[in-house]
Length: 75
Image (cartoon, rainbow, N blue to C red; front, side, top):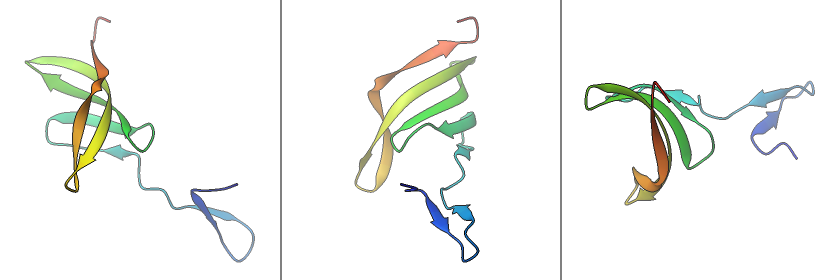
């Protein structure tokens, strides 16, 4: 029922998920939507874009997949 939370002794729940917001070298803000999906705001070719993308794990490292979209600030 509560997959991502642990119960304390007094009945309250503790959220043990990692912080969903992360900062990467070329990104301004990164938020994890799910285990394999992220939303990031970053600079790409001198423009600020919002990138919604799926990631996959290969050899213990995460790489961006084909599924995703990059939106400019105008969009």
